[in-house]
Image (cartoon, rainbow, N blue to C red):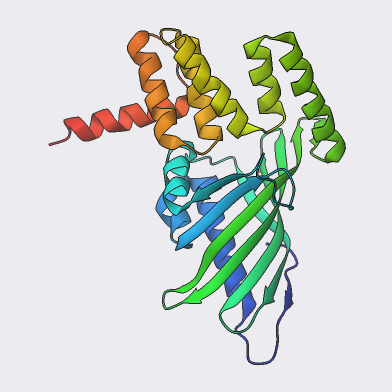
Length: 256
């Protein structure tokens, strides 16, 4: 955590441990793949929202409740010793004694890569300590080696225009790629679902649906779609998260 800025009134709790606890839970997820430590900070009614900007947009926002957060993270998380996650200049403000807002830029870096993400956490004080009630985040930039993509309005205007052009082409795969590039994951999932209904024996369609479902926060459909692809072709190469989930299921089933 770098240079925490805190705004609080007289008699309010020390904010530094609160910031540190939120950051530690996120580091546990990104660096260690520790789902239990990650979920320990989330209140029962918590929501996680992935948007394109801070302003809500029902068309592009992916909103998950606590159960969906846990289910999707269970598939995504894995120990990554070369990964580093840190809050940069977090700002905590209190609203009375039992509520607070944490704003931060989060930097996730690894070999040759770095992502910068803006985040807003809403926190509440409970008998078990401070818990996350909501977290909204949006991608600011992504770097691979020397190639940097900035996710600003111009980027999304170009991405949305690419979707429009793809739709005109009438090619489903081109549309799917354009929707993914525009982070319009709900539309991508709907498109992928319709394609599996039109071509239920096409393995590639089911794999696309599995990936799209996970992007849209639908872990059950992601697993079910991957399972369908494997049933159609036992030798098919699945996303690593699906292979790991199925291996874990097999070990649990065969354990005494």
